[in-house]
Length: 271
Image (cartoon, rainbow, N blue to C red; front, side):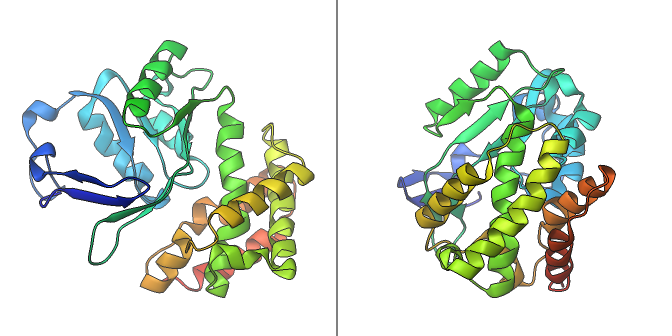
C-alpha cells in the first residue's frame, strides 16, 4: 500500500497511496485506531485466522462486525470465540484475484461475496448494512439465510478442486478430463456425507456435478491458490480443507480415506 493499489482485469482501478493507512505488527499503530472500526475483514490464509482474530480485537468497535474470507472450515467458530458470536458473520467469495510479481493486482474473475448471520450473530439489519457497503464497492454482495450451507458449499468445491490441481500441477480446466473429474466427484462424495452430518443443506450429486463443471469451465485458465502455494514453496491451506473434512468425519464416526490421502500428499509438499 506504500505505492498505492492498481487493479486490472474485471475492472481497471487505481488508488493513490494517500487512500490507505498502512501499518504492520512490528511497528506501533495509531492509537486513534483502537476500537474505531465498524467492520473488520480478514483477507488472509486459513492458518492465520486465529492470530488475525486477536488483532481484530484491537480495532473493532464493541458493536462492530468481522468476517473472514479465508478458505476452509472453522473460521466462524474461531472468530466467535475471540470476538463473541454477536460480532461475527459467515462469509465466502467467488471473486478471483491474485498479485502479479511485476505489475498490478489482477482481478481475474467476477463472482459474489456471500454473507450470512448465525443464530447468535448480528441482526438482519446489520447484515444488510454490511452488504450495502460492499455493493457500493460493486462487489456483488449477497445475503444468504443458512451460514452452514454457505461455508460448506464453497468448501466442497475447494476440496474437490484444489488438492488434485496442486498435486498434478494442473490448471482448473484440465480437471474436466473424465478420469480427473471422476476423482473430484469421489472427493465430493466423502465431504458431502460429512456436511450432511453437520446439518448443512448441500446440493445433491447431480446438482453439484453441474456446479463443478460450470466452475471449472469458467475458471479454465486459473491456477488455484493451493497450486500457487506449492509452486512457491509456501504452506498450503490443506489443514482447513481436506484435513478438516477428515477430522469432522471421524467426529461423526465416518471415514474419509480419499480426503486423508490427499491431505497427506499435499502436506508432503510443504516446506
